[in-house]
Length: 366
Image 1: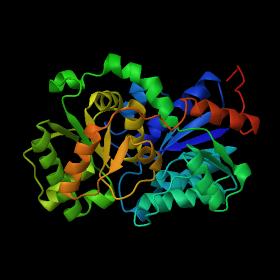
Image 2: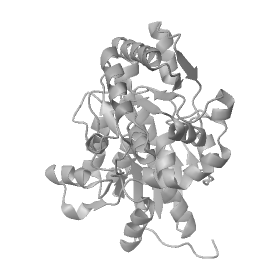
Image 3: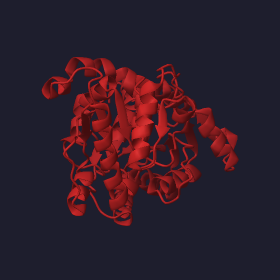
Image 4: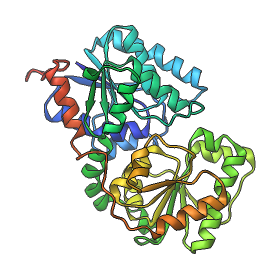
């Protein structure tokens, strides 16, 4: 039996192809949702839109400090894993959910598979960096998106026979869901927008939104971008970022703030944008796959492949630099090659698990 442990919007999206493959092959598995993202817009709607089965368990962990959140998850995850006794636990990425799931499974003697392994920003002030390093080093199967990620793991002393380069399941998700988004998404009609008539922004990372100076500079940069290029900016604002704006007393008259979008509407809006400004690692990947220029509002990235193929560029948070990097990306030819795989990562991961006899096909009677 396989246990899929997830808890955030990006994890739901990136696990979707693996869940669909489990369903297609009638495999013995269950989904455990920690509730790290716990509102309807950030959570349940994604299962509904992507037509995925509901989780067998939902822990409803909610918010808290990193220690509080991770500790709550570990206590409840342990109860479930003891009850279900899976052969392997799958976690994804760099979230507190991934860390909690990997630590509990390891201590219970259950094998751990880490999807999206080997990513590094080399900035240990980021909680995500600590999470991904710890998860990698307690995992038994490390599914990497690229050769670069595989080499990072090898250089850190992880045995070669634990590493499997499968590509990134985000490619699967984009390929599988873009057509659905084209049919169902209504966001452009509601906002009265057309293709390439707007910039899309997403800013949510702790190092940006919890730091008043950085957050204020980003907003000033977005204001200047809107003025310089005379193109409206739409910022799908995360609830936590919205709260921090209120705490810091930050405002903008140039930016169009919109509520968080469901996955299909966000994917559609992203695909039609003239350019995207973001601090999200997943959005860096998605824009690369969608052939949309991206300016990354950070000083570093754990997705260096996007920099190498020149689908994205780092701007930091200085307003002048943000404007200059937007101008640079708008002048570029869109001719990069997607480095994250062929869209079959989920199937490759399941095949590896089947070959290692971690999951079995259910009996017809089930």
